[in-house]
Image (cartoon, rainbow, N blue to C red; front, side, top):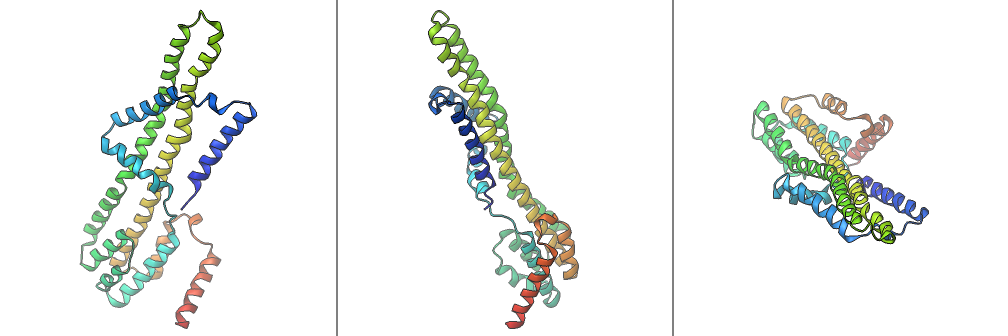
Length: 270
C-alpha cells in the first residue's frame, strides 16, 4: 500500500486546523449543518445527474481500492517474465500452460494460457489490449466522476453563500445580527472550496494515478508475454522490458547484480 493519499490528507487537514488554532477560529464556527448539507448533497446530486446511477455507485466503491492499492514492483515482474521466457525456450510454448497454473495474477494467467492454446500473436495483442481497457474502465469513470465533483463544489458553495446573503439583506433592520449572519453565509463557499480541493480532486487524482500504474503494469506483462510467444531471447527480453520502465522504479545496477547472485547461489544450494 502506498500511503501517499492518507499522509497528504492528514497534512492538508492538519495545516487547516493549525491555521484555525493560530487564528483562534473555533471549529464550531464552520461546522454548520445547513451549508454543509447544501454543499455535499448538491455536489453529489449534480454529479449523479451528469452520469448514470451505476457510475456514482461504482465510483464510491473504487475509493477503498485506490487508497489501499498495492505498490507495483516492475523489477519482480520483469524477473518473472524472463524466467517464463527461459522455460518456454527450453520446453516449448506448451509448457506455459503448466506455468499459468502457478500464477496468481489473472491477467498474466490468461495471457499465458492463450499463448499455450496457440492464439495468433496479433489476435492475442488485440485481446489483451481490450482486456486492459475493460479492467480499467471503472477506474477511468471514477476518476472522471470525482474530478467533476471537484469542479461543481466551489460553484455550489457560492450558490449557498448567495442564498444566505439574501437572508442577510432581509435583516438589515437588525444590525446586531448582521455579523453572525454574514459569517455563516460565507461558510458555504468555504465548504465548497474545502471539499473540492481537500476531498474530491485528491480522490480523483489518486484513482487516475492508480489506473495509470495498473495500465503500465498490464502493458509490461502484455509485451513480455508477446515477446515470449515470438521466441525472444530471455536476456534481450529483460533489457527490452527494463527499457519500458522508468529508472526510478527499478533497483540500482549494483542491487540488481547482487540480487541475481543471491538467486544463483540459492539455486546452486538447492
